[in-house]
Structures are given as C-alpha cells and as structure tokens.
Image (cartoon, rainbow, N blue to C red; front, side, top):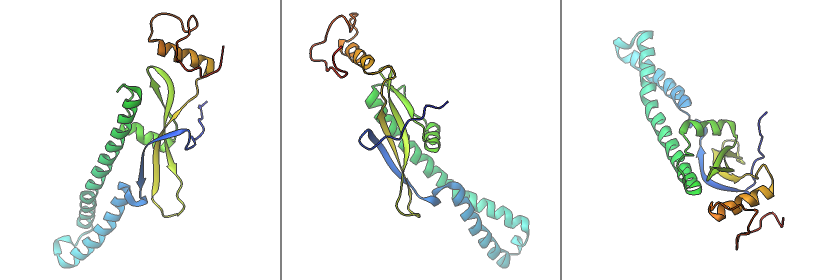
Length: 193
C-alpha cells in the first residue's frame, strides 16, 4: 500500500524552483506539426520537380524534414530539464550537506508524472520530502505551471523521538546518552519528559 502524503500547503513547503510548460512544447506534437508542414512542402515540390513525383519520395522527405526540425526541440528540452535538475540538486546539497541525494532527469520526469514525494535524508535521518506539483491555472489555454517543493515530514516515532534525535545531534556524538544529560540551550520541541 502506498504511503500517500497530503499535498503540502504553501506555509508548510519551500519552493525550490518553478517553471512553465506550454501545451505545444512536447517533441511529439512538434514532430506532427512539422510532418504536416513537410507534406505540404512535399506536395509543392511534387508539382515543381519531377523527382518528387512519387509517394515514397514524399514520405521520405516528410520524415527527414520533420526529424531535422524536431532535433533542436528535443535538445532544448533536455537542456532545460538538466538545468532544473541542477538547481534542485544544488538546493538538496545545501540542505543535506551531502551530494549523495542527487536527482536524475529520469527521476524528475517520474516525479512529474506521478506526483509522489521523494524522501530526502538529512545526516542519515529521514525528515524531508521533495515533491513536484502542478499549479492550477485559471485559464484553459494557459501554460502548465509546475513547482518543485521541499516539505518537512513528521517523524514516525512521535515528538519525543524527535527530541532525542535533536539532542543527540546537538551533543555531537560524544557517547553520552541524550537521556542522561540535558544540553544547555537546546530547544525542548516536544515539551518536558
């Protein structure tokens, strides 16, 4: 069973990056548009040049024409996604002080499609989640707006467990138990014990 996390509210989330996607920016859509243009241009060439007066030549011209015009669209989309992943990874590195939690372009695409949270561990302790959300637009033909947010997830063992974890982190791992002594100046997040 999936652990379904509620969508974070704006006050519980930090937006890492936001971007827009226009409906016609997909390479498949561009290929279809360029194919239609290629057929029209091929028909014009059939009238003017005798070498293009066959269905095979028209089909070959259409595929090559659409393919050549779609290659820059694919390259631009890849570069854009790499830039997004780099900005997200830079933020994750700054938060976790570790580059082990890097996100790949493939993982970002999966997060965009599924909307599920991706756990991030800080010093080996889970507690943050990265989630990609679609921002609703008011107009039907408006570009799709997206944002990647980092949210804090409550600990599974409750606040007392979180207090002990915080005290252990603040003690610097000197070997003494967090229960055996109280650290001066450490916040008491969960109340008294």
